[in-house]
Each structure stands twice: as C-alpha cells, then as structure tokens.
Length: 459
Image 1 (cartoon, rainbow, N blue to C red):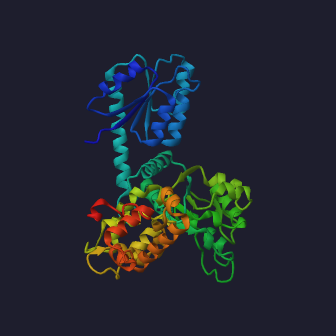
Image 2 (spheres, rainbow, N blue to C red):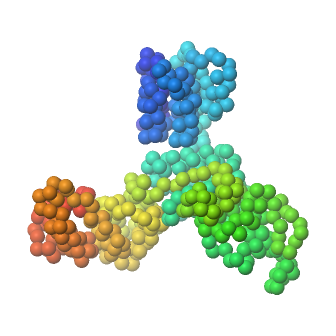
C-alpha cells in the first residue's frame, strides 16, 4: 500500500519523535531537525505534505526561508506550519507567504491527523482530476521519474493559477508541444489550440496570418480572414520556438500580448481578444535578451509562468516505459518486443534529440525487424551513432598497466567489430577471433558498456 509521504522539519527533537507515532499506519513519515537536512530531503524526494516549524535555534534562517525552497522545488506539497509563534504580525506573514495551514503549538494529535486528512483528500481529488484531464494517447506525459513527477506538479500549479502567458523551456525534441497540449487539455477551456511555428512565418504574410485581414486589404484578399488570436477564443496560441522569431515580428506580437487587442490588416478597428499563450523555446531567452536578439519586454510578457522540461538523459529511468509506448504504436498487434540487452543499449545512449529521436528510432524498426524480437543489432542498424556508447572511460589501472595507446587501439578494434556485427556480441567475438568468455572479459576490462559482462554470460 502506498501511503502518503509526509516530511516533518522541526528543531524540537522530542516533538519530532512523536510525529511518526501520531501518523502511524496513515502516512510514511520522514523527520529532520535542521533546515539543511530539510532542504536536502526536499531536493531529493517529493512529498505530499510538509510539517514545518518557524524558528530553528542557532540558525539565522527560519521556516519562511525553508518555505521558499519548497516553493521553488516542490510546488505540489501542501505545507502546514506547526509553531509556537505567537506574534500576530509573524503569523500573518506566514499565511500571506502561501502556506496551506497554520497550527499553533501545543497542538493535539487529532488536530494534526484531521488537518492532514483534509489536505490529503483534497490533493487526491486534484491529482485524479489532473490525471483524468491528461488522459492517454499520443499527447500523454509518459514516465514516473522524479523530473517527470515535478513536471506534472508544475503543470498542475500553472493550471490552478490561471496565468495567461506560459513559457516552456527545453531542448529540441524534449516534448514541449506535448506539454503545451497537456496544459490546454487540462485547462478544460471551450476554446481551441492553435500551434504557430515562429521560425516558419513568412515575412510577406505574417501580419495576415497572425492578425487576419479584411476583404480588399491587398491583392488576393477576396474575403475577410479572422486572426489567429480570435480563432482560438479563450483557448491557447502555441508559439513554437519563439526564440527564432525575427525582432520586427516580436514588436508586433508584444502589443497583442500586452493589450489583448488586434487590428486586422486593412482595418482601423481594434478587436479585443481573450486568448492564452504558451511559448516554447530551446534558446536561452535571457541570454538572447542580453545579445539583443530577443526583446526584453516581450520576454517578461510571455513568461508570466515558466516551466523547464527535462531532457531524456536526465530521466533515463523513463526510457523503458517510453520504448514500450512507442513499440505499442509501431507494432499495434504486439507481435514484436524488445530484448533486455537492446533496452539496455537504448538506456546507455545520450539521446541528443531527446524523446523525438527515441520515437523516430523505434518507428524506424517497422518493416526491418525479422522475428518477434528487437535485438541490439537492429538498434545499431537504425541508429548507427549509438555505437558511441561503446567508448566509455577505460580503467585508470589498465591505462597505467598497458598504456593509453594500446588500450585505445584495442577499444577501437572491438568497436569496429561491434559495428560490423550490428551489435551481435557473439558474432563480434568470432570476428575478433576470441572466445565468448575472453570477449566479455575484455569488454568488462575496457568498460565499453555497462552490463555487457554479466556473470552469467561468462559461465
């Protein structure tokens, strides 16, 4: 049974020792007596609720300082301050900071249990509602790694806040449009979702494409055209790769985002619009502002809320689930599955193209896999650059014993054999004239790929 995770941070060790007993069989409780320990716990784990003291003896920081860390790291946790603080102005300051609840010390076990029961019930309903709105399918968020759990919490926070202009930051292929569509779907708006690729906007037609036009505004304008901002109603305009938008287009966009009004080409009438915006970029816009390639005023307007999307290499533990998801789409009848060695190879790669590259790799397997299994050789064939994982760091002891030059030559020889054999280790051993056991031992010594030389392989 998965119990709710509770973190208690208080310098009163005697009281702290009672918390697990008060919540026994109801919650999984972790306790720390210092701010530093609390910060470390918050940064390494997600919690459903955090019980927090206000004052810590011998530490100039207080509970509000720790609460700011919680806000920056784990927005999904409800925070209950349990403190002997009696100054009204301090209590008001605590509540204005955004904590969920305040309980004065001394408090009773029933008060703690009842407060948490209400908070956790409400949290469960929010999570169920969010999960229902996220749904399944092409645009679902896949993975249960810590970065993905935090991403879901960020999305839930943004949706609850009702902020109208959101900036998504992340590497190419990391899933910015999937997140944008997830936000749109979870927001349950009656409007539409309209994606616009900012780097592909035509200079000659950008005003007509974005702002619409009236009949007769220019040659070929034989009827009125509604603007992109009007077309979504109270839905979302998705500005994909907004960092690629030329400066002269940025100035025009700024006015619309700032005033929520548009003027169609050929018309003097200003029309109010009620759109929400999601902008996505792989470019560091703060650096772009410094370099004068992106307007500072526009950056502040589109980034009322910011969400950072993790790269695939920062959530490698999600790769198997992603692979199974894409395999089900590529082989819908379930006639093909992935061997554990092939999966290990995929998890060893650094994926510069992120989830998009992984999806393309799996899709490339269709029509070329012989038999019911995807093997290492198949992966090497559709993604030749994956052989780079065969070149990990060599043991310093071996370098000192045999010399770097000799080891590099041996490593290159084994890499070439692996490429020639398309990942088939037994075939690579034959190409090299080695026995299977010798090949695995040499691979292990050279540290070419994690997990190659499993003990069972040497038997």
